[in-house]
Structures are given as C-alpha cells and as structure tokens.
Length: 395
Ligand code: AMP
Image (cartoon, rainbow, N blue to C red; front, side, top):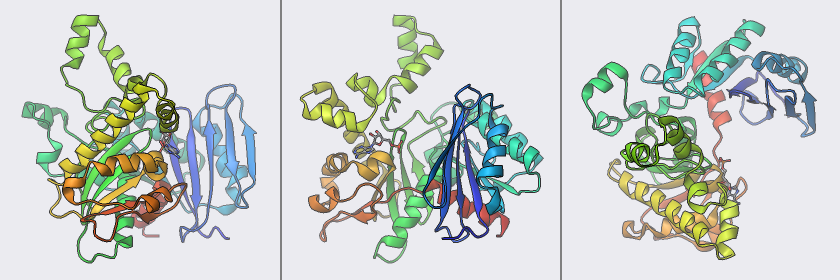
C-alpha cells in the first residue's frame, strides 16, 4: 500500500470536517472525521493507513483552522497532499463544473450562501483555512449542483413568473451531483450493453434523490432549489402541496421558520412513523406489527417508484435503475418493494441476488429476461471529488 501524490478531499460542515486522503491511483486512502468543532468536546477520529484508529481531542478548537492544522500536520503531513478538493454544496448557475479556487471563486461561493445558508459558509470556511495554513496547495471546488447543470430548461424551471428566474435565479438546481455522477458512470462501465446508456439513479440515504442520466448527463433530478423537494427522506417531507405553508400558517399560526423546521427535520420517515428516521428501526417496527412504520415504508417505496416511472419521460432510452446510499446499498427489502411497482416496465428481479447485495457489495439483481437492469453500486463521493480535482488541475 502506498499513498503516492495523494489528493486531500474535504467536506466541511458547520461543526465538522470529513476528510480523505486518496492515492494517485485511487486505490488507497486514509480517512477521518473532525466533529463537534467549536465545542469543548471537539475531537478528530482518524484511521491510519494500516487501519489502526486514533482519537485526538481538540478542546477550544477555533472551528476549522485548528482541526485542519492537526489533520494536515501530525495526522497526514508525512504523505504531502498535492491538491485539495472541497465538496461545496451550492454552485448556483455560476458553476457548471468543478472549478479551481481563487479569490473570485471563493467570493462567489460565499455569495451563494443565500441559496445554501447552512452549507456554503462552512465550505468557504474550509477553503479559507487551507489558504491560511497551506497557501501553496492548489484547491478545487466540486459542487453538488454542478452535475445537474445539463438539465434542460423544461426540467429546471418552476412554473412561476419568469422574473423570479431571470432576476433572482429561482430554479431547480438538484444536489447529490457527485454521487449521481460517480454511480451512473460506474453503471455504464459495469453493464454489458453497448451504446449510450440511460440510467435512473436512486440515491437513498438519510437524504434521498433520484436522477435521470443519459450518456453521462443529468436530464432531470428530484431535488430543487433546496434539498427538500422530491422524494420522501429520513426527516424531510419531499414533495408537498406548496400551499401547505399558507395553510399551516392560517390554521395553526405556525411561522415560516417553524414550517421550514417541520418539513426538514420532523417529517419524512420520522414524521409518518412517529418512531425514527432510520430505515432499520422502521423495518423492525414493521415486523413487530407497527402500522405507522408499515405506512412510512409503503409511502417511501411508492414515491421512489413514482419518480422512477416519471423519469422514463426524461430519457431517450432506459437501460436500468441504480440504487445507492445507505438504504439503496443495504436495504434489500426496500429495493424489492420499489422494484415491484415497476412491473409495467417489464422489470423482473432475482430475489436471491437482491438479498446478497449489501455492505459495500456491487452487483446487479435483474433477471436475464428483465426489460431493464437493476444495479446496486456503493457511492464513492470522495473518489469522484479526488478524480475531478486532478482533472481540473491536469495532475
Ligand atoms: P446514508 O445517509 O447514506 O448514510 O444512509 C442512512 C440510511 O441508510 C438510514 O436510514 C439507515 O437506516 C439506512 N441503512 C443502513 N443500513 C441498512 C440496512 N442494512 N437495511 C436498511 N437500511 C439501512
């Protein structure tokens, strides 16, 4: 195992930094997580190259800078990263691809905080910390939204007055782009079918989104101007009647902020089941006879299937469906429930093959006579970010 000319991948949240150091050939990596930054119990959980684990406390950490100093110093300093790739959540319509960071790019990322107030400021803080500590390291921003910039206008526009789009950039952007890019590309490598491929990718984790990808380009995706639109998620409602805001305000006196919290943090699997946002807990509760859990699972599957069927309209041809994310990669029961709704497409799946795909396994579970393919592909956003970082820098 060696870590030749590695790229450092950073995913900076408001109080956390997820990091991975990935070798030139993409085969070897070191990873870790700094969490509770800014709090007294701030710590870094680090996994060495040999798999051994270290935990370092960083009390009084001044958020990102202090943690990055330790990560790039004592934890990975000896491997000398050649570049840093940052996950940046919102690239608006300014950034259509991964972009080398300079002062102007950083300023745009900060401006886009108007569209992603929780994420972009934290992403920018990580970039500034690297600028301060290691100004010689080239940095690249990989935007969650960029992959979806190929969507046609009929998919990305909302049916609202056009001035809101032209003057205020109100449109659908989509997220999870790095995951959809990696997984759809990988599916095209794995299929034995020749020619151009049309995939519907279901990224099902705590956050969920579906994307129609044709010949490597996103043609439609289920998240919108924020990551609330689309599928039912762990705690997010996904699609609701937009008049719900007005109705809840009028009838229950809830404020805009309260409704936003309700739809983002108290809805989805958690809201419907009243038990948990975790698929595993709901599957257990369902087996124990809890009807709210059963309904939450039925709704989740039905809504994913509706999006898959809807996205057949986006694609010139359909090769198959790809499942990824914690639920997509591990939840064989949920996959079976979703795929069962797709019988009108001529979809047939192999129950035994489906049941064997979990915990990092990559493979297909369609039958030989199925009209479309079904794949489970574990997502690897870190790999994709490192790959795009090197491409942008010509490394
Ligand atoms: P992620 O956000 O991608 O980490 O995915 C988290 C979701 O994956 C949670 O709802 C978990 O319950 C779900 N998950 C993880 N393992 C399993 C499993 N074996 N079966 C079903 N769901 C799972």
